[in-house]
Amino acid sequence: MTASRLIPSVPVTIITGFLGAGKTTLLNRLLKDPALSDSIVIVNEFGEIGLDHLFIETRDDGMILMASGCLCCTIRGDLVDTLDDLMKKRDTGKLSEFKRIVIETTGLADPAPILQSLLAHPYLAARYALDGVVTLVDAVNGSATLDNHMEAVKQAAIADRIVLTKADLVADTALLRARLQALNPAAPLLDATKGEASAEALIGTGPFDLANKTPDVAAWLHAEAYQDHHHHHGHGHDHHHHDGPEGQHAHDVNRHDAHIRAFCLTTDDAIPSSAFEMFLSLLRSAHGEKLLRIKGIIKLAETPDKPIILHGVQHVFHPPVALAAWPDADHRTRMVFITKDLDERFVEGLWNAFLGRPGIDTPDRSAMLDNPLSLRRD
Image 1 (cartoon, rainbow, N blue to C red):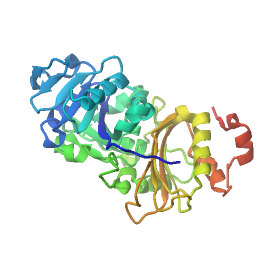
Image 2 (image 1 turned 180 degrees about the vertical axis):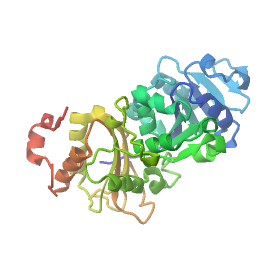
Image 3 (image 1 turned 45 degrees about the horizontal axis):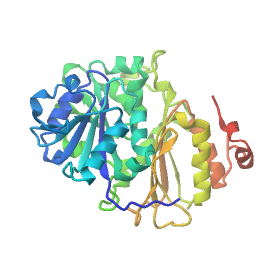
Image 4 (image 1 turned 90 degrees about the vertical axis):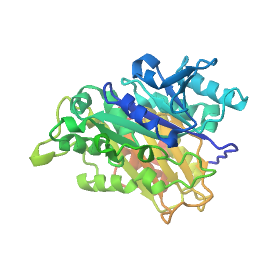
């Protein structure tokens, strides 16, 4: 498993959140920060997001110059076409250099297909890199939204940063905060009303340009948060059984949280690349649709001093990128999984089988290779 990158990639930040969560307000504020200079903002429809007061000029190429100096464009056809068009214009000199892309999704969007667009297309995967998913959650309606809309649950579960908005309009956010932390133990929970959702806090959350930036893998993965979460519930315990403040049980029949698992697998052992590729291949072929997000740093037996960075969403994985060296003193393989309707024990059993350390619920490796469909647990 090898990878190379000849041209530094352009980082892409995705801002998502359900209808009314405050994406427009946040985007307006972020665009005033110098950190987003020389950026392009991609939105779905100009009329939907209320940025008109920031537009100062319509260009011949259909893009709009913003007061911040950024350019704004709508998604033409689909996201792949838009990103491809932007990069081709940049390469041919029809568009000036841009340092970042910010994508603001529709409130009803399932974020997985958007991430897949970045990871799956060979050209786009080489020229762009996911630099983080920022999810906004409305403190007033957040609990009801999570109860009634699986899209909102997915938006929170795969986020690198969660921004709580309108917290000043409710008396207590403790239950909602506990619920979001259970869904996504590693994502920092930032309060927009306290000024915590700054560009510095939201931009540059992933190892986007590995040619020029040493990623802070510990912060990016925050693996210890999953270990603490795992330890709190005990091995194999359903992650959706949480008690809220004052003993209030947070489980409800209308909640979608029961479908989501968040966990981290680690090992000190270097993994043969063939075994690692087979592990990913079998997991994707049997349960790819249930892998909301995977990210990790991997220690391969062939290059133990040069780990690889892994990004994946459902069946689609970004070409792995090799680091020149370990970025910190922790040289373990660490893989973070966010899954839907896929038990941690099953993934861990499959992992153990390929590490050669069978245990409880570990499938037979030779049987798996002969019949990958035997892995399905629908």
